[in-house]
Length: 465
Ligand code: GLU
Image 1 (tube, rainbow, N blue to C red):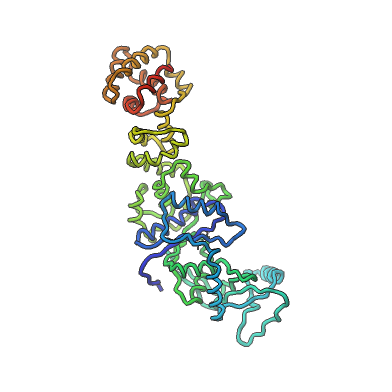
Image 2 (cartoon, helix red, strand yellow):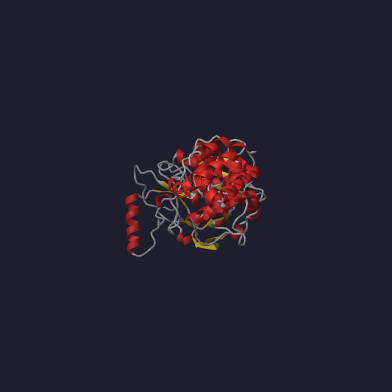
């Protein structure tokens, strides 16, 4: 049965253990996009119950990474550790309704049971020793042992759902043993907390990594025991790294924020991640607005997607190129300040001149810095281009530039006159000038570069010949 709901509510529920990487954040992007595309709500929930592994630093990267990518949430962040009283209250309801029983089986007994089952080539599972049933006599309660609480999984029948990615999934209840839902100290366990949260937060669509697909039938059974309809599920296939292994911090995956620091644009990253597991025909490059217009759960990919840094760079380059100069100038500011550059009104124009030859903001900032800092020309290129033969022409050009009107047309005229006077060809003059003023011979057209430069600086740099 398809659940009915009047407003879409999705969530991202990361565990703050280790730094969130691109594979993880894709599980935030899709539920966010689905909420935005359908005019619903997106909720952030931090699943921090693993006290040994959860860290504040990891929470910070989640929040910063999402803010950078513009994945804004409508509610939260909710922290599971702050909801313990709520879980305990719901647990009490479940106990009162007879869905839970205490189990006193010790670790040693559980180990022995598992070994027996393995020896018999059976799947290891709890055997229901302590599950009460009509006419069944339970073992004597051992003294001084605090029990765990187990959930009475239904016996017989199947748990089924129509996964938006994987299609229909049916799991026989006989495959599922009675899950521990509270530890001996009374603290509730993971799957139970997730269900209580998804109910309380009125989640309509759970979009998450398929490493959770085995939890889903258990969670659905808990939903039913609590008298609630489960949400719609979409389990996203894994993201593989460039070596074809599951992306993980252990395999060298970088924190999401590292891409911000390496000069990727948030919209480019959203575009790249969107395509890593979802498609809209053959469209490769799209804006955030287009993505939200197109996104739905019907075109999620079924097979694992592989991260490709070169492709990401290419996508970033396309977004840099397409971006409005003034907006780009804003994005590049932090990178300029790292280089000690204090830009001025020329910045947007410089961005416009260089944006089509950059694949990251770091590269763009490097170009821009040449307009603001006195740079040392690349020695090899200087030796190659700034030859004794060309030095008189450089002096002649410097003379003209010292007094001409400082705009592109006049600068172009000064260059042209110098060429006529000296009989040099354009590249023979332009290459050494570029090396001296920009540090390298590969730049956009010289008159445009010079027009955006400061005359005094150009004079200084040409004297370096
Ligand atoms: N906390 C889980 C994780 O980080 C996600 C749980 C869920 O989405 O249901 O993998």
